[in-house]
Image (cartoon, rainbow over all chains, first blue to last red; front, side):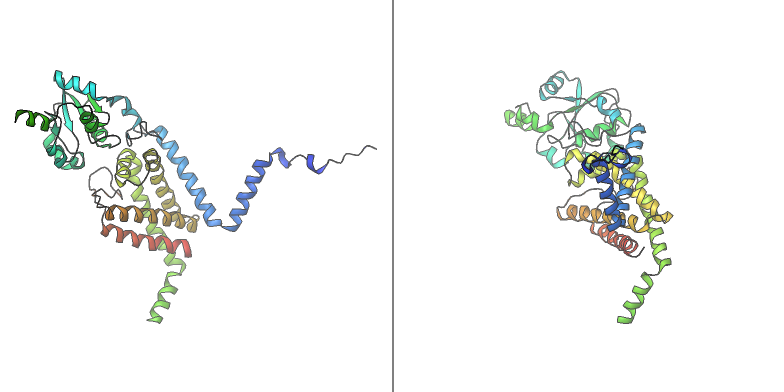
Length: 197
Length: 147
């Protein structure tokens, strides 16, 4: 009679699961026995992640999980293409042609120190306070170039998002903002004043 | 004094008291999560303002954190896995305390993002809010340790 014994090393795993899964399950079981509340808290957290993924996928104003570029945090997927970024050279051509109004999203004291000539100041940090007054100064049929301090400052994209939600359509965000304009050596109010002097 | 402390300890370990505190904390967490779930973009802006996380993590945090509040709050209200939910609520509240404290130390004038994130009745992060969250932390810790 032939022997049917299997060598221990070649013995198949129960249920056909790979050793990795079995090991992981054993680890979870051991953790659950040792610290049950932490394991359950982790399970609740996993449930929250699952709900967040599902709800965000279905929500009309869902966010991208990884903002791209990183400075565009808090911009819903639906708005990504409606808030294009332009470089300083493109902004200069719009400035010279007068095709767009420039909006400076920085704080008032920074605007007063220096800004792009003709730009109006609408500090994003004071949106709620200033919006009733500003909306009469921002014609809806005009194009706007929004800028703030520099890379990843986020104030101009945030202002763009708020303007989109208030039925403004033609919005552009100056990539790297005031920093890009200054570094390109384009005209500023202070330059024009010192030239006039 | 010692007798009062002993009485307080006895009261706080009473099952009904822990259940009531858990219910209260759970309702606070559920209410706090609602506006953030509806307006994740506004909440992401506030998280950005706290300036604590790398930019690539801000959206993910703003999406997951409100649901964590909701799940922990629902578990506390329903009395399911109460101690685990208390632990999660404690961890969340500690993170709120750290966020508010660092904002205050750095002089950041920012919205709290505690309940309202859509600007209807926004409150500024402050030491008053810090103290309020310390109270919340005590409730969460009680449910975690004694639930």
